[in-house]
Length: 180
Image 1 (cartoon, rainbow, N blue to C red):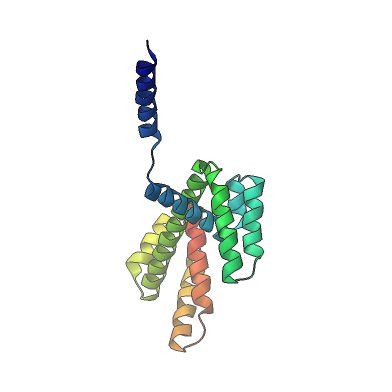
Image 2: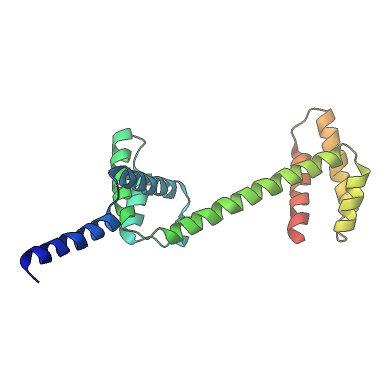
């Protein structure tokens, strides 16, 4: 093989390699922005979730430093840039999985909260059908205590008092749901 054939072969091989590795500048910016957004989300979660993410110590320290900084725009912006830079070196698969699970749990909690509010409101409106369903679903239910909470809540509402019994009723219903 002569030199010209060898050079053309290298060019052909190089161009194939470049095509596989080529990522547009816009795409790189989008990826970096996504990593920085993920880093921003990490600064907003509690320490328990941060521990589940198993972050490298340098990234964890940067996040804790970000949380420590006052809300001065420039200092936090620079620290967020640094967190984004560290995120590029970090495998984000576990982080994304933990955050996704946390969002899922939050949505379930919101849905349960809404269901309990509806159940409480139906009981307060005097729905005997809802009460009977609740009694059938929870045989260990203290019926007398439940009826007492309903009466106290209705009385508080009529007298325009703070909702102390309403909160007790909600907590009791939540405990019943947890026991099933």
